[in-house]
Image (tube, rainbow, N blue to C red):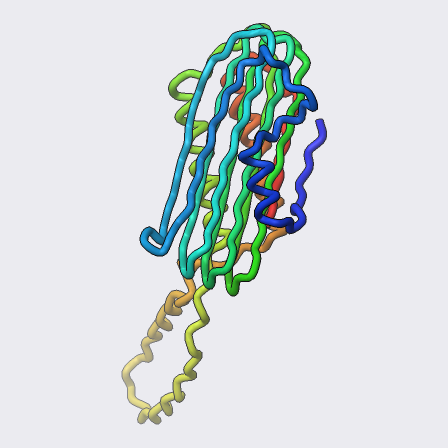
Length: 276
C-alpha cells in the first residue's frame, strides 16, 4: 500500500473550481451506464455572514455494473476576517459493480481578504464486494491569492476496502467514524488558528528579606508557593505544517484500524493528502 502526503502547488482559483465542480473523475471516457453518486460540502462566507460551516454526510448502497462516487469539500473565503469550514463524509457500499471510479477532493482557498481562514476536509470510505476494477483518486488543494494574513488548509482521506460482501457498518461503528471525522475537523481548524501575541513580560522587583533576631523558638520551614500557571495555556497556536502531515498519516492508520475492526474486509488502498 502506498500513501502519499503532499502539499499541492498554488494554482489559479478558477482552475480549482473547474476541477472540483466540473467533474473530476479519472476516467477519460466515463461509462454512460454508470451509477453516479455525488456528495458535496460547500462553505462560502460573506460580509453579511462572516462565519460559515457546512457538513455533508451520506452512507449509501449502490447497485449496478459500474459506479462513479464523487466526494468533495469546498471552501472559499473572500471577505476580511471571515471563516469558512467544510466537512464531507461519504460511506459507499458497492455490492455488485465490475468497475468503480472513486474520486475524493478537498479544496480550500482564500482571496482578496485580510485575516480570513478557509479549511476543507473530505473523507471517502468505500466497501467493494469481490474485486472489481477500482480507480481511486484522492487529493487536497489549498491556495491563497492577493490576501494579507489569510490561512488555508485542506485534508483528504480515502480508504477502499474489499470483502466477500459489502456489509454495512453498524450504528455504533458509524458513530465512531463520525467522531473520528469530527476530531480531524478540529485539528484542521486548529491548523489555521491565529496565535495570540505573547503577553508583555514584567519582572517583579525582589522584596528585601528582613533580618530576624534569633530567638529560642524553633525554626519552621514554610513551603515555597507553587508557580503560577502559564498565561499561554489554552491559547491557539499555529500548527507546524510538518506536524499536520505527520498527524494526518497517523490519523489514516487509525481510520484503517477502525474500519477493519468493524468489517470483515481488507484494505485495498488508503491515501491521505494534505495541502497548506
